Each structure stands twice: as structure tokens, then as C-alpha cells.
Amino acid sequence: MTGMPSESKVDSKITKKLREIVGENNATDYKHIRYAYSYDLSFVSPKLPEYVVMPTSVEQVQEVMKFANQEKISVTPFTAGTNIGGLCIPENGGILLDMKRMNQIIRIDDESHYCVIEPGVSHAKLASELAKLGLRWSWPVGPPSASVSSNAICHGIGGLSGRYGLNSEEITSMEVVLPTGELVRVGSCAIQEDSWHSCLPLPRVDGLFTGWLGTTGIVTKIGLRVHPMPPVLKVFTASAENIGDLATYMRTLGNYEICDDITGVSWWLSQVPIPYPYKPKPDDAPEWVSFATTFSWTEKEKQAREEIWQSIMDEQTKNGSSVKSTVYPEEALRARTQLPSQIVGSTKNYTKQAGAGISWPGTFTPLNKWEPVYEQWKKILVERNLSPSVRVTNYRGVHYGMLRAMIPFPKKTPETIENARQAIVECLKVDLDAGGIPYKPPVDFGLEINKRAHPGYVELLRKTKKMLDPNDIMNTGKLAL
Ligand SMILES: Cc1cc2nc3c(=O)[nH]c(=O)nc-3n(C[C@H](O)[C@H](O)[C@H](O)COP(=O)(O)OP(=O)(O)OC[C@H]3O[C@@H](n4cnc5c(N)ncnc54)[C@H](O)[C@@H]3O)c2cc1C
Image (cartoon, rainbow, N blue to C red; front, side, top):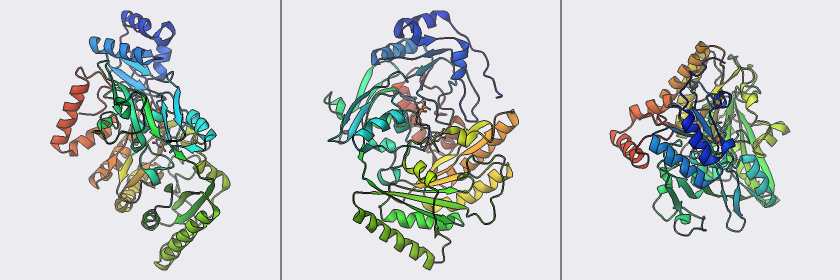
């Protein structure tokens, strides 16, 4: 891999102090360990942290933050580092705060359907505990080792987002250590210590810690709404020759609100691994395939859904659409419905053909803009020999949804990394200009967002950040302000 991070300045007195706080084995300045935290899969340039710290208690997190704030040392929160946007790459070096060891499931309330967890709880761990109680969460198609809480605070999405929206919309309460070391609570647990059921009807101060990319505080506990798991699964699968027909079908189906997830993937994204360099799809293969997941309590309920879906398909055919019903391989269906999945969740499936790199323009875009944006993305990506491996997904109804490309590229030379970066940023500009908004944005995207933003909005971000993090130590530079 190219782009070795340049060496940084370690101060052994700081290492000693950090070890006093978290214990001898939980803080280090060893270079080989720091190196592992200096890069991710994305095009973002690697940077070395000077210290890696793994706290095991809230008190330790508070002490680390008080010390870092006093000494003005940057702190980058981390759980599994799978965000694919360079969000955990320490732009300013400093302390890499790995929260993985705080990994307790504190409570699963199977009557009121919420759980309270620490940030190190992985999707795999929560999934196995919820399944025992017939409950589920909106699992992303990402690595099962990644953190449920990091996904939720970064507006992550998963297999229930068509029905319930973003995973951040499921947050019921939070405990957070501020950059200055104070402990705060938001949601019902702020009023009654043991009460974690709801952020509303209080003022939505949980918004101070969601979508901020770990720049405003360290989440140490989070409450999340979970959902019952109906036993009868039916997945409707279809293909389309073009994104216009696909989007019309997905919008029509979304209107009925009968699906947990409605997703379309381009031919390139449906290949395992995704092709690198770009290769044309075979003429006889449809450009898009789609799956729509439904869960019912009874066979009769499932039949009612099938009836609705069939009437939608008949309407599409009558209108001359290219949308057709298809049969999906069993393995692919399992991968889509039994998340977190070892099949699609394996990152090597995405990257192994290309050689280590993967990045995305990941956006929330209105459904009626998918077609024009995708057509431009395809042109940009193919010209740069990259796959237009695109996914579209409805979020809670039909007014907007994900429009995202998952693009593998080799990290062997600076040129191949720069080629991917330029292509992805170009795609992003097209989407921003069409009214879309990127999620989990790398700094390059943040710059493009802020360029277009209302000055009052940018000023409000600055003031809020200053209030919470007066010395600008938390994940410095990530907001591209
Ligand atoms: C192949 C692949 C597929 C993916 N598919 C999806 C998908 O379908 N949906 C989806 O949403 N995501 C997806 N992702 C992205 C990612 O896996 C998830 O968002 C994941 O849940 C992030 O968890 P993490 O532990 O890796 O977070 P990290 O990358 O460690 O952290 C993410 C951000 O949160 C901050 N942070 C971490 N811990 C804390 C804390 N305790 N307090 C405050 N800030 C903190 C970090 O500084 C960083 O800004 C995918 C990734 C890959 C590689």
C-alpha cells in the first residue's frame, strides 16, 4: 500500500500519564500498533496517531478527555474503523481512543422494545442476543464486527430503513463524555437515571452528537429502539433495464409501506467481487436488480402483500416498463435477510479484485433525482475505468433514499488512489448540485458541502462546535469548517 504516514512526535511523559489513567496495558505509543490505526479502506491519506488508548470505563474516558483538553491533544474516537470515509484517521495525530473494550449490553427490554448498550457492542453480538428474544435491529450490510452505536450516531442505515428510517431515528437516549471531560445525558435517562425509553418530548439535544462524526463528544452508552421479528419472510425480486423504470417501481411499491427494505443494485454491484477495472456488463443481463423484503405474522398477511406487489407489477407492465419479476439465488436472498451477513458483509468481497481500496459517494437523494444523477455518475466512473457499482434504497417511505456507489480501487500507486478520489468527488458534486446530501462525509466531501451551505448554517456549526469543544481537540478537521 502506498502513502505511508509520516512519523509523528511521541512524548513519553504523555504515554505515562495515559497509562496511569487506563492501566499499563491499555495505552501505548508503540509504532506497529499506531500504524494499524493510521489508515482505512478509503482514498484518505494515512496519518499516525501518537498514542492509542483503550478505556474500559466511563470514568477513564472522562479522565482522558480532561487531560487531553488541558494539554490540547487531539482525540479521535474509534470503534472498528469501518466507516470508509477516513473518519477515524487522526488528521492531527494525538490520541486514538479505541472504545472497543467498553462492550457490554446493559439491558434489553423485551417488553418496551429497546436496548441499552456500550459503544463497543458489535452488530454480531447484539444480533445474537436479540435473536434469543425474537427481536431485531436494522442491520447494515457492513462488517458484523462494527459498532452498533457508531452506526446509529453516524446516521447509518440497515435492513429496516425502508420502514423505520435511519438508525439514528431509533436512538432513545444517550450518555456522552464532552470534549472537556464532563458527563452529560440526553433523552429520558437525563431525567430519570434508569429510564432509557425516549428522546422525545424533550428538546432534541441528542442531535448535538448525531451526524457530527465524533467531533462533539464520546458516546459511552446509547439506548436504541428494537423491533419484533415476524416469522414469515417474503422477498420480492425484480429486474429493470434502466434506472428510470427501477425508480418508478420502487416509488410505487414504497407508497404502500409494506416493505422493510426496498433496494436496487446495479449489475456491477451485484457481482462478487465488484469488477475492477471497469468491464461492460453482458448485453443480455439487466442493468438493475431489486429486492424488497417483507416480514408477516401469518401466511394470510403475506398473501395480502403478494397481492399488492402483483398489482404493482401488472401496472408497471401495462405502462410499458422494463421491470420484470425474477428469481434470486437462495444464497443471495439469505445474505439480504439474515444480516449481519457473512456473505455480503465480508469486505474482501468488495475489495479483493481491486487491491485494498474502497470508497463511495454515499448520499441521501430524492427518488426523482436518482435517474439523472446515476446517468452522470456512470459516465464519470466509466471514463476513469471504475465500476458504476451503485445501490439505491428507499428510506421510510418515498421522499428520499440512498444513492450510493461502492467503488473498489487499487492502493498500489498514488495515481490509482488519486484517480478514485477525483472520480468520487466529481460524482459527489453532481449529487450535491441535484439536491442530494452525502452521509459519513470524508473531509473532501465536507469541503464541497460547506461551499454550498447557507452561511448561517456554517456559523451555527462553528458556534456549536466551539461551545462543546472550546480547544478543538475532538476529531479535529473532520467537519471541514
Ligand atoms: C463493506 C461495507 C459495507 C457497509 N455497509 C453499510 C451499510 O449498509 N450501512 C451503513 O450504515 N454503514 C455501512 N458501512 C459502514 C460501517 O461499517 C458502519 O457505519 C459501521 O457501523 C460503523 O461502525 P464502526 O465501529 O466501524 O465505526 P468507526 O468507523 O470506528 O467510527 C465511525 C465514526 O464514529 C465516530 N465514533 C466512534 N465511536 C464513537 C463514540 N463512542 N463516540 C463518538 N463518536 C464515535 C468515529 O470518530 C467516526 O467518526 C459499511 C462498511 C463496509 C466496509
